Image 1 (cartoon, one colour):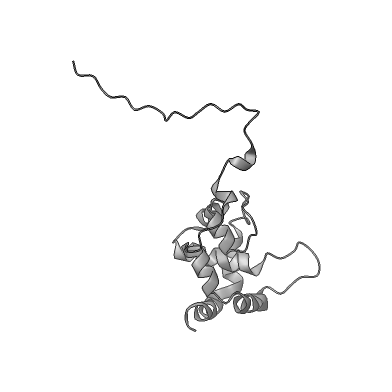
Image 2 (cartoon, rainbow, N blue to C red):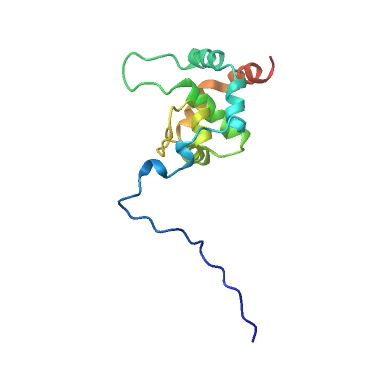
Length: 143
């Protein structure tokens, strides 16, 4: 009978719990974002201030009630939804899970919380309408 070669876990040197320090454990969230990531590159290309001003025409700031969502978050989520061909719930889930998408929509650090309820996409579509979506596309891609 032929002996099979068993794969084994890599051997790491034992380090006492007293010697482990959090700063020595690297994770992607403690490192810099990759500047050539598609969401980082797209962020640099978009005229966010102009897009926000078009958005504000249809979602004016309120003086009372719950604060408005950041226009960059809303518009970035719409862009992610359409570029990745996702449904409303998948878009919210993807943003919650992806540090690069969170950077793209304007977060300053990673959060695993949903940015908003997926049902708000219905409100965005109703209020913005086809003409405003065309205006966003022109601002984004026709320059």
